[in-house]
Length: 234
Image 1 (spheres, rainbow, N blue to C red):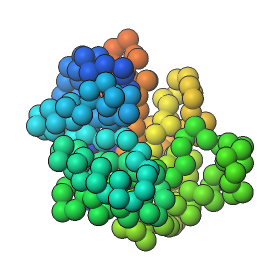
Image 2 (image 1 turned 45 degrees about the vertical axis):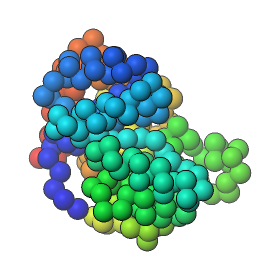
Image 3 (image 1 turned 120 degrees about the vertical axis):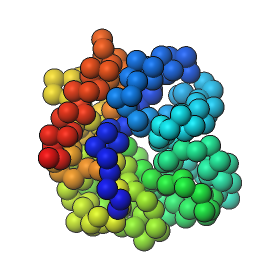
Image 4 (image 1 turned 60 degrees about the vertical axis):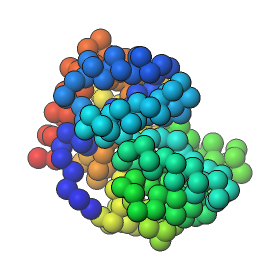
């Protein structure tokens, strides 16, 4: 894997309902943040044009769409997305879906990330969904399949990072949502860590939304987390 600049280890999630709110946050954060996540909520509010804008301004974009459909649809959708200038695109970690996305990206610079198990799920949630394995077992299985498929990286909770490093080594980037600074509310996340803890166990990047975007001063909150990350990797 390439060496990651410390300021690109933090991805700020623009999980807001309008492009205007996203642009206001981006303006507040200024040069302190170079990497943003745009998810379904913002995409459905017109956020795809923001992907292009941020890319042209030299920012990096993680497009979190979690694609999952029949292979032909995923391949064609990925091909369209590859034209936007995003750095990352998420798909669900099913073998057919991953392979289709890789075909769709072609020779573009888009990197495909496989979602293993959502960070709002625990073992009980998997049982209710019909799975007979634990979260840890399912993440391990999907990590091995992603490695075999040639995927760039994985989305997983920080709780699984250490174990999955034993499966993939340094061949895949491990990117973790479910990050909460000490004292922050857990919200709808179940498998969480602090930014420092996540980096210490081997996460390459952390994705953080509300602890920054809902802060009284988002820039100060972001800088504090960046400092915590830099201390963890030093």
